[in-house]
Every structure is written in C-alpha cells, then in structure tokens.
Length: 200
Figure 1: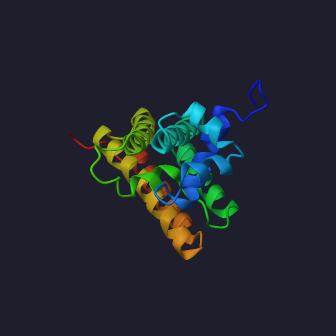
Figure 2 (figure 1 turned 90 degrees about the vertical axis):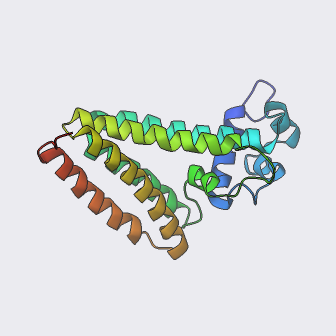
Figure 3 (figure 1 turned 135 degrees about the vertical axis):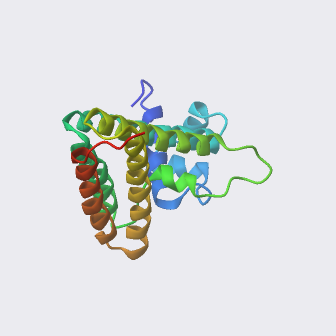
C-alpha cells in the first residue's frame, strides 16, 4: 500500500498481469483491470496516464521479469533444474486457476493489434520477454556443455513448447499436454548435455 493507503503501482501491475492471463488484453478494459487489482480508476490513470496499453506493457514486463528471476535462480543448479522450475511455474498457475489462467505474455502475443497503429508496446514487451527467457536457457545450456547452435534452438523449443502446451491445457482443461512436453524436454536437455558437440 502507498502512503495514502491506496493501491501500489506494483499491485495494479500484478493484478493486470493476472487478469490478462485469464481474459486476454483486447477483451479487457482498463476499468476491469483496475477493479481486478482493487484499485480506483483514478489511481490507475495516475500511475498509467497513457491508459490500457501502458498498463498492459508494464504487466507483460512484470510477468517477463518474474519468470527471469525464477530462471536465474534455478538455472544456477543447471539447465534441467531451470527447465523443471519454468514448467513447474506454469503448471502451478494453470492448475491453481482451474485452467482459467495461463501466461500473460502469450495472451498479449497472440492478439491482433489495434487497427491502424504501429506495433503496440505491449507486443514488443512480449517479444522481449520470450527472448529474455530463451537467452537465459541457452546460456545455461552452453555453460553446461551444449553446442552453442543447439543450445539456442533448444531454448526456443522449450519456450515455444511450454507456451503451446499451456494453451492446450487450458482448452482441454487437462494438464497432460504440459506433463508430456515436460518429459520430452527433459530428455532432450539430457541428450544435449551428454552428447558430443557438433562441428560448427
């Protein structure tokens, strides 16, 4: 809470990320984002004078940074530990929300931008979040002996597979797709670390 007893900027951003993960961006108004965070609309506009796109951009950056913090911590124990933490995070969110919530970064990434505008800042933030996660995973794979080109490909595969599996789980109301993806990605990482490096 801020000094005035109103909601903090961070709480509004976190609430927006949660609602976007459930309903997407286009179907959500700034009034609904404020209400979801228990914030007065006036406070929301005070922190985000440019409105919904500004708040959405900050929500995506918040989600991206939260996952990056988790990855940095867990990758210290190696790529397999990072992978398990990454997939475990999304598994927990999907299951705890009864398949109502997914990834706010994906939710923004798959929506059509408003007509006649340049690429929205929220979409750019989503691309940066995905890239940040891939970079951390690829760096860990390289540090633990994976071929650099294969490390980059495998990091992209991890992020893309996780995001696709999250969408499938929500559609089917079944966590099995994410669990299947998890098993195969763990096997691929083990192979990438145990196998001989390929010639570049």
